[in-house]
Amino acid sequence: MDSKESIKKPEELLGPLNEVERKFAPEKLFLKGNLQLFEEGPRVAIVGSRNPSEQGRKDTIELVKNLVHHKVIIVSGLAKGIDTVAHKTAISEKGNTIAVLGTPLNNYYPAENKELQQMISKDNLVISQFPKECPIQKMNFPLRNRTMALLSHATVIVEAGETSGTIHQGWEALRLGRPLFIMNKLIEDTKLSWPKKMVNYGAIPISTADIARMLEALPANGSSLIDVALRA
Amino acid sequence: MLLSALEFGSLLTYVPQPTNDEQRKAKDFTVFLKGDKVITSPSPQSITTHVAKFIAKNIASLPFGNYFGSDVALVPVPSSSLRNPGSLWVPYNLAKALEAENLGQLIECVKRKIAIAKAATAKSEERPTPKQHYESLEIIPTNATMKKIVLIDDVITRGATAIGVASRLKEVYPDADIKHFAVVRTISKPENFVKFNQPCIGKITIRDGQPHRNP
Image 1 (cartoon, one colour):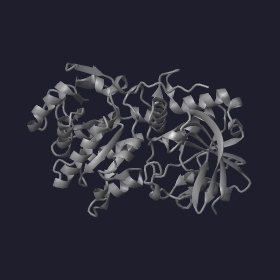
Image 2 (spheres, each protein chain N blue to C red):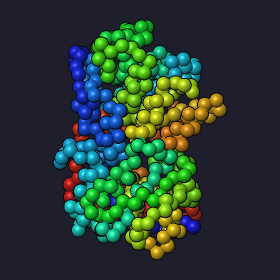
Image 3 (cartoon, helix red, strand yellow):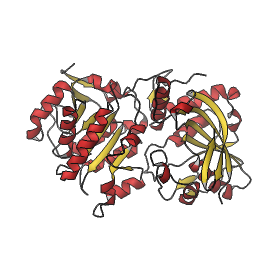
């Protein structure tokens, strides 16, 4: 395991990027932890509200447990709420997790997740697109969400309000042509407009029981270096 | 009015739930294709470019080789959902790559006006019918010659989209010869998967409003 810090271009982790992927890809990524995770399994981002409902927490736990059971690596943003539940469940289920930060690697935001961030950087992987001197700014977080969409084979939005930063990630996943899953209850919530709009643009409604359908949309392995050349 | 049948060609096969290494390779290729990933071997290029070059190089031996030619309109199939400008559209990239190999002329002339459920990820009972596809599509007028039309898609599952698009085009271009090409055709059951590289031509027929693809 490598818990040293390193700097990589996104292409070095994901393989060459296409034009759509390049548009918002950060120039560099600062990493701390086990880089091998990029070769070890499909990566699914589980994201959502900083102030989730009890049902949102339960849904996150169930989804993460099921995905980890199928060797899926759980990606999230180390924010309060759904992100924290996703990371902690992945760890407690002996799965792997990647935290994509909205701050530089040497900052801890929120402060209460300092220990979790250190644990993930030791046994799993923490990634930031922000160099150490970069100030913590509100605009960093939607940029981080775009990067998280790029680094993940699929994104699941478990719970999010009308103004949640998570919505940026949903639109970016759709722009990239990556599967975006939204929990059914969000689509049925008459107070929310974004889930229905995203479904019209290609998001896929799911429940926590729909793991098989989610797995069908993921690659069989997580490597970006598989041999896909056609031969006559 | 809906067409009752449509000929299609496809190059490869895959299963959504693979059970062996060959099937896993086929699935990874398909996921990469749906993202139009850039591959490094044999040289850095998008998968759609790689596929178009492969078809151009092997056209004489491919069963659907006669679908392509300089007088053919290559019409990218719209996705089931609406699309924001600048979003990835793999059938468009594929049609463009085929055009670059002189295998036809890219004509963007069908668009989705109403989003419908995604067939690939919908439960079987929720998959849209050819009629729903037909009703959700509209034709963009073009001055191009539309005598020979090939619908270009990345993956064909049952063929409902293909029938919907072809039916719309046939209304506007009644004399056109319309065929459908998809890089990959889906094999639902792993036990029915024979091999990854399996070029074929086949037929989609409509029975009781539902599409049936053979093979």
